[in-house]
Length: 211
Image (tube, rainbow, N blue to C red):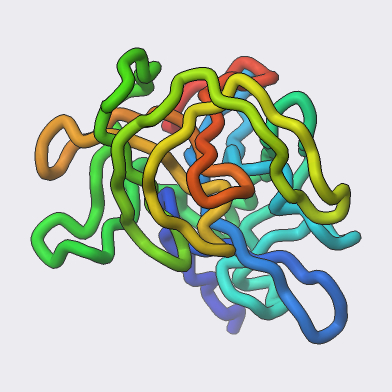
């Protein structure tokens, strides 16, 4: 008798892993689910999450085909830190909600829309694999500076949002959002390679939120 494949839920902000070498994996956070013009499903994440030679990403830090999310088919570091993972819907079911381990009452935050941030002082949050949910106030709408990205070293970035919020390695690629109420949020972007640099939602292919 054939074994039944167990479909695993994956939420925005969950940890995703790619193999660097035989014994090590790197970690990032899932950005948002999107669909391209050809009705193809993707996860949008940070481009710097691709650090090895294998473009495969998993739900667990092990090379197990049953945990395969998909393969990164596109990634950039310049002019924006952005990548796309082609979703393997055989193994995973994407959920259009943000993981919120800080709350037992609202463990999943529903993404209602995408909104640009237009005012200094706006309260923004991010969800990531390492620090979970952290929040802070927007300090700049058009910041610039040098950020460190593997394997290219220091890279200059401009036209970025700067937010006073804590993050750690493994949070990169996760969603940046603001609360509309305790359960519903608007998506604003994805977290890039430094602690407080948030990339604006400038998508290089035409995408819409999944589903």
